[in-house]
Length: 493
Ligand code: BES
Ligand code: MN
Ligand code: ZN
Image 1: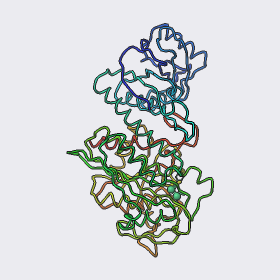
Image 2 (image 1 turned 135 degrees about the vertical axis):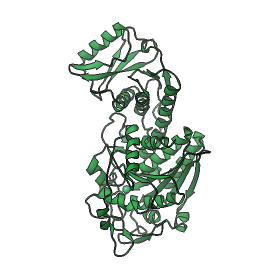
Image 3 (image 1 turned 60 degrees about the vertical axis):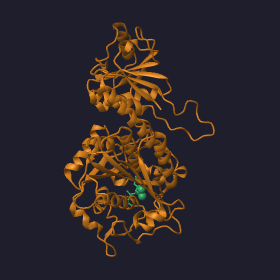
Image 4 (image 1 turned 60 degrees about the horizontal axis):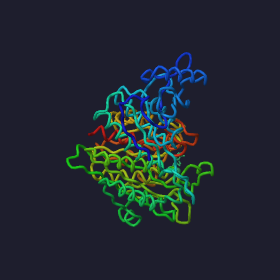
């Protein structure tokens, strides 16, 4: 695990393996970020090196220059920031640099940090870029799981604001890496009971005061959780709802977070084609984000009560599997007609939302790899945010923006509700193809009691990066949502 500390000392004087600087995209190529106070000889050397490399200063460019005159560190890495030095650009630029340096022992990051938002983004991106999944192997790679000591240069001094921002980035980064690890873990090694065990072990290792309670398959059946029981009944690995709670004394508010935790989504009897199943170990990314956010809130000691509900099940076809046209009774008493066993996420979430609502929290947010329609609408980088209250929806989108996790508001049009009408039950769990992200959201909304602000974040796309590493996102699990949920909770403190 990388560690983060703050410095205000001149960059050139710091003994380290590498100093990271930024370059913006100018009209005639890369321009070394002006904030990097450097000896004249060092600046001239770097500018010549950038010109020689035809550097453009685009995000994704990483140039390494060794033995820069006047710079104590062994090398300087210049990372592209694009045309504007925004927190988002800094976050990606820092991550790209640290990805190239993740095997080093000590890296100094000297990117522009004029205010708290930019300093947080630099620290967050630097941590995020160090990630690598430790291969499951008889001979794990030497040094796997370690990470550099990262010293972040702060232009807003070395006082409390700067120190807190960097300390928070470390807590967030560590939690997000846990979420990534959970997503990347093969599905045979993370069935619901193992997910439960992993969460318990992590809480213990952290020492954070997070309470945990578990509903196993018997308790779920007894408690009337027909949605998650139905989804889990086709698998030899039974379902669980794991509740994690952070309850500080004198909490200013209470927030419930509900995560979809399908440890593998085969589609069930409505089985997916092989290609559609390829990434379905990631169908628990919502639960992973919730677990990580609760842990981070507790580690930071936020004065807000946070309860995470991890709705864990494996969706498999078998002789005991749920059938299309089954009718199940949910935790809140309503009956649901199953039309497609591949629309399982909303079933486990609906029971989780109903359970969360029983405690009367001030707000409920669910997060889920819920629909392919999300990816059709918004692509693989931007999450869709829906809610029963426009101002709460905007609040969640703002939290995502603050965390540099792209998200976009989506509607829950009342007219689409009739698509969920059923002739045999209170409601069907899906409508036709059109607006599939929205009808899934409308289905979930029926499990939220009147008057409770609720938002739904569909992360089917941004939770998993099938392409190569880019900016803060490694290949595979991205940990999307951990920052958004943590930022949202912080807004109540
Ligand atoms: N887990 C999938 C959604 C998904 C697809 C996430 C691709 C990430 C990438 C979900 O359970 C699912 O299968 N949804 C169906 C719903 C449909 C049957 C109504 C879908 O989107 O096709
Ligand atoms: Mn599915
Ligand atoms: Zn699914």
